[in-house]
Length: 113
Image (tube, rainbow, N blue to C red):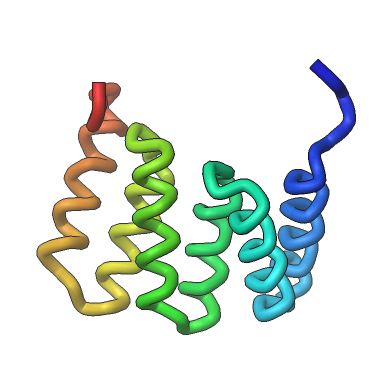
């Protein structure tokens, strides 16, 4: 295995730098390039969802959050983030469902075996 980061990893790091500087539109554009180049890159979907949420683009954030939980259904942070996205969009039943999945994971269980 090579120690050289992939182009997606380089882009992801660049986008994360923009988030750190509060440059959300720039970060979102780069995260979108990441998922276009590598549609199964969980970290990019998760980060895209969080950046979209912080930027007030809630419906798109939920879509990215759903992709993240689809790619890694046993990721605690992905379900927690999705729950936050649903709460922001006033989808309380969906938020409670996502929160329940996060709770199962926090106790050492699995959502998908």
